[in-house]
Length: 342
Image (cartoon, rainbow, N blue to C red; front, side, top):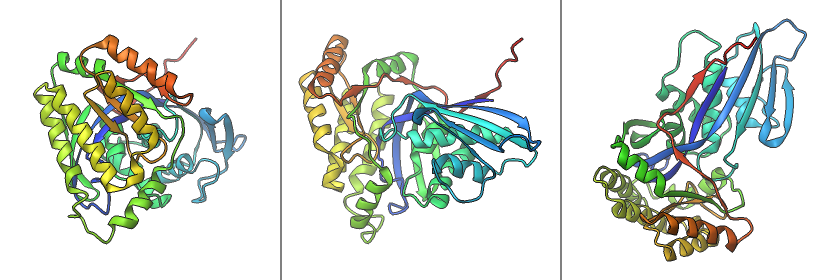
């Protein structure tokens, strides 16, 4: 059994999808590279471990006798096994891999969780909807692992495409796919770049830092209001095919992040943005929780040689900066069985 789920970039309106915001509006774009899961299923006969996890990115392969509510090496993976209630008569071997580096601020952990839930869902009758998969992935992080996270990463990964999300009352939300002609889709894809700053961060830790300032201010805190505006501005700009307006919404969101907390837009982000501006970029968005690590989404102008020159200068300016090739993902979670060989 195979499953894949995309990561996301350009999460305009992020931070308004949290428990302390209570309500919000978010725009995001699902992209490759995928989180990938391959699961082999055997009849459980006692001669093999019930669960074998192969965390390829970490070079770790280990076994679990039973899901037990205590999570050790890779809590996200182990908690997903626990939540999904694997049937007692099967044993599984699960390999997990992602080309997106951990701590990239692009919802990689959510994509891994969504892909893993999708694969595990195949062990029992019936199928979860995209909404149910996203909700389960979010519950695993917040309820089982007691981490701080919003809802938009899991939604982007489960649904794919370009999404406008309205969270009416945390964690309940409606999802409106932003469907545009192929020409706009291709143009957007050609202009976007993802730059990793070369060091990871813990989004849950950054959330805690922001929450300390905002939890007493309530959902109508003045610092949250500008963030809510950027999602709708992004949606309207893309429908109009106006990339300059879309870029401005990205810039406005990044500025609002900096106001939310001074540490959310760090010196690495600022250095990348400065180079991008000199090469004609029309937009930039510090992804996710930001902080000292993570990544930046850049929206270039229509001059593609200038975009390539921008990427070269960024990568040459610091040994840790890395361009991660991305492509827009029309689909969210995908699940299929491998063809039998021989």
